[in-house]
Every structure is written in structure tokens, then in C-alpha cells.
Length: 187
Image (cartoon, rainbow, N blue to C red; front, side, top):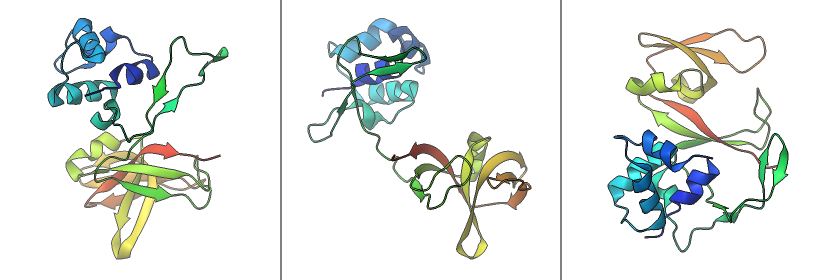
């Protein structure tokens, strides 16, 4: 199996040691290096551990023959654009299984018409993971509310709509919410 562990790690500006510490349970930089170079076989368990440490989907770490990659032409920081020190590629994102999307048809808040939001579904026991994030919440009669989750009080969610001067809204016991996880913006 050909992996893109090194490419993803470098794209996130992480050292081998940082990735090793982020693994659960922690491992050594040497082990991560061996997994990157292929001198140690990457099992599914290792792929999942490293993906979690890099905060990507495990599929983003596997190079498949029919999966496109983009060559990195430059890196960008506060000092400007620079040529990469070594060849880099980025794997285009793939949606998470079971996720949903939101198509932005009119500008609101930080979002522009034409944007797409990929969202991760959260069950009620995981609503706390979405605090201070933009979420889509189902309402009765097939309606929805898209707002910032600013608090919880038992089964009630406190949401701040993105419209200017909006007042917080409380929604009690929604069956699920969808947390915005990735913004896709075309220029």
C-alpha cells in the first residue's frame, strides 16, 4: 500500500515527533518515520491512529491509483510565497461517510453565494463537540436553522443566528445536528 502520510504531515507543518505525540497511545518519531517510508507495514489500525493524529480521514492517507492529487506549486506564509523545499502533493478532500452538505445560495455571515459547506452529523450525546461552531439543526415541518451553537442547558441548545442583530434562539431536544466541518469556496 502506498501512503501519503509524509505529504499530509508536511502539509500540516508537523514534525515526526509531533505526530508521534498526538497518536493515542503515543508512539515514537522513529515508528512514524518507518510507516511513512514503507520500511514498516502500515496496518489499518496504524492508519486510523495516524489519521486521527493528523486530523484527517484515513482515506486521505492512502494513495490510490485512480485518486487525483494536486502538485504544490508554492507554500504561503506571512513572508510571502515560496517554492517548496521538496516536491509536495495534496490530496483533494473527500466527504466523511454519513455527512451532509449545505449549498450557500445567498451571502450570510462569513459565507458567500456559491460556497458549499460539508457537515458532520452529530448525535445528541456528541452535541458538545460542536460548541462555538456553525451548525444546521432540524426544526418541525421540514425546516432548518443554521446558526452558531453558543451553549447548552440540558436538552436545550442555545443558537445564535448568523444574521446581524439576531437574538439567540433555544431549540429543545433536536434529533441531530450537522456541524460545519469544511468550507468549499470557488472563486
